[in-house]
Length: 371
Image (cartoon, rainbow, N blue to C red; front, side):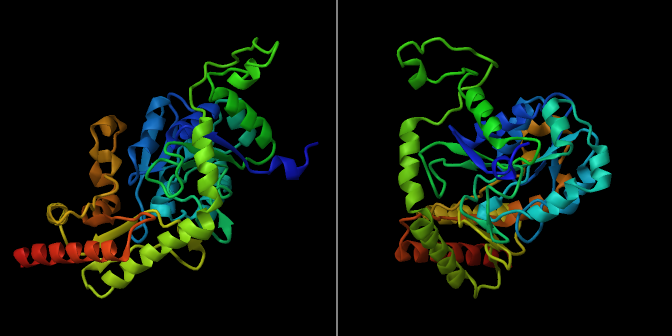
């Protein structure tokens, strides 16, 4: 009998990107043709692309109007007998409502709907909760760090992320009994290196050249040089990086809070704290074309604001999913009014004020033109 201290220990595998991490997990869980994976409509295309590449169907759930996060009631309404995975996204660094989602997938009604097709699915006996935490490394939910809130969590260390290895990601395994997270970690490590039972270092040892390929795997391992960069970054992450990014958010709050048209983002609550990755400012009562005009005016000032996500039903690649933009009205409403402001470690007080001045001038100009 396994000890719980071993079985429930979080084990983390570094990979070459969060995208490949998500796809590795879906393939390990046996996701394929005919399966459904519930994801928020408001996310990056990688979240949906990995589902399509597994030949499964992404099912789009709408988001909460206040915080951009997947709506738990929407999840409940989308679950069918084909649902195998729920894949929420911690947008901008703020964790989703994990207790609510975990409770939902364990209700008798939902458990009865679950129809396993593979041994791993049967062993779990319910829908897998796979967290896309690409934005939320270092965030907390009810006193717990992201990486411990779902069955499996995937992080991103891409060049634009708070903690970067230039390119990379990680899979945090937190599976319950009967899974052994160390065994799953070892299997995924093999899967991430073409299915080889030995890596280059082991094969270079005298007499160690012979190996097996146990699965037609992927090339998804993190390289040593990227890992070395990550070790430097992680050492200063909580005591330095997060504190600086929190300061940037608070400075934007102070500069925009007195404008009646400004809807400030939620990045802290009684039970959540963000990783301060994106500052998604929303402008009240504007159209999509007005938002685009505001961005254009800022760009002319040399201020590089943008729109972080477009709802996935807007893209050609998702035309065959059966979902339309009208099916996710809250996602569209958030998208059409959102402007992501620059957030990075070295941004200065002068640059923050320049961003605020440019955005405020652009908004006032556009609003006055339409008055």
